[in-house]
Image (cartoon, rainbow, N blue to C red; front, side):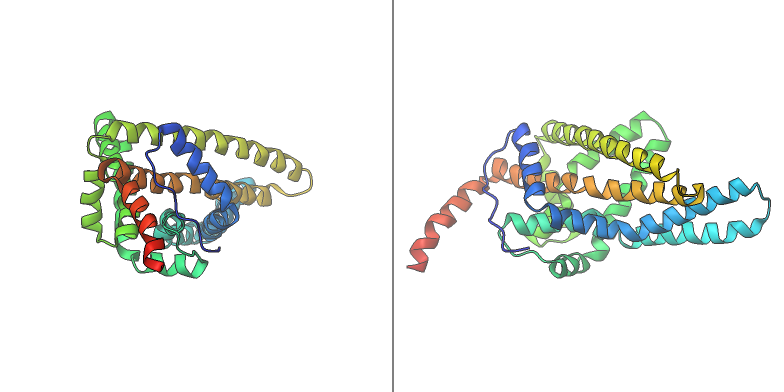
Length: 277
C-alpha cells in the first residue's frame, strides 16, 4: 500500500461518517479485506474441521468416544488460535486505517509490528470487553445496558493508543474524555453501522447458502459442514473492517469537535510551504 493522502479533518455528520467509512474501505479494499481475511483463516480452518468432524460423528451414530479426542483437540486449537491473534483480528485494520488517515505508508510488515509492539495491552483490552459482554448477556438487561454504556465510552481506546502513542490506561481515560457529552451521538453512529453490517452479512450468507446447496450435489455432508463454518468465519472477516474503520473516524471526529483538530491540520498545511521555501 503506497503513501496515503492524510484524512481531511472536518466535523462529520452521522451520514458523512458512514459514507467516509465505506469510501475508505473501498479505496483500500484489497489491503483492508486481505488483512482481515488472512487473519481469519487459521481459526476458520480449525473450527471448520472441528464442526465437520462433529457432523461426521453424528452421522455415524457412534458412541465410540475415540471421536471426541480429535474433536476436542481441534476445537481447542481453534479457540487458542482465536485467542492468540485477538489483538490482530480486532486491531490490525484499525492500525492500518490510523496510519492511512495521518498520511503514513502502510505495509503488512508495518501493521504486524505495530500491533506486536502493543500486543499485551490490546489482548487485555479485547479480552476484558469479550468476557464482560458474555457475562452481561448471561445475566440480565441491567448489566447489559451498563456494558453498552461503558463500551461506547471506551470505543476509541485503540485508535488513541495508536495515534497518540499512549498506554492502555491513558487511552481508556482519553476515550472517556472524548466521548463525554457525545455518548448518544456515538452510540447512534455505531448502532446504524451495526445494522448495515448485519444486512451486508445476511446478503453474503445468502450467497454462501446458494453455493453450499450446489456443492451438496457433488460433495459429502462431512465436507459441506466444514466449508459452511469456515466460510461463515471468512464472511465475517470480510465485513468486519467497516466497524474498525468507523471507530477510527469516530476518534478523529471527536477530536475535531472537542479540540478543533481540523484547525491545527489546516495551520500545519499552510505553514508547510513557508517552511520548505
